[in-house]
Length: 49
Image 1 (spheres, rainbow, N blue to C red):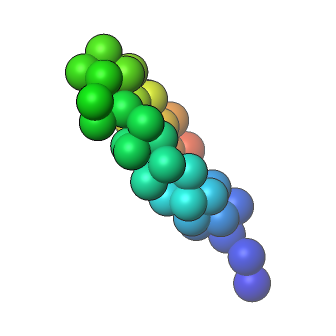
Image 2 (image 1 turned 30 degrees about the horizontal axis):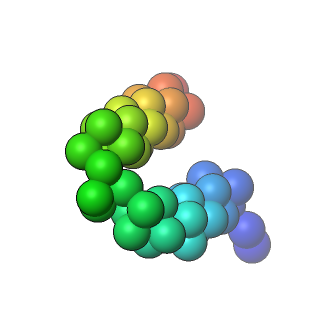
């Protein structure tokens, strides 16, 4: 049984590390990554209802 939300989170985790490595020397890039994560969390919160 596959859960699309879990699959998406797993995919995001796979992308997160290289994005972090690229962003850690770029504060603006890191801010953008945080905003993306917050948007994803809000999106998944919306899916619960």
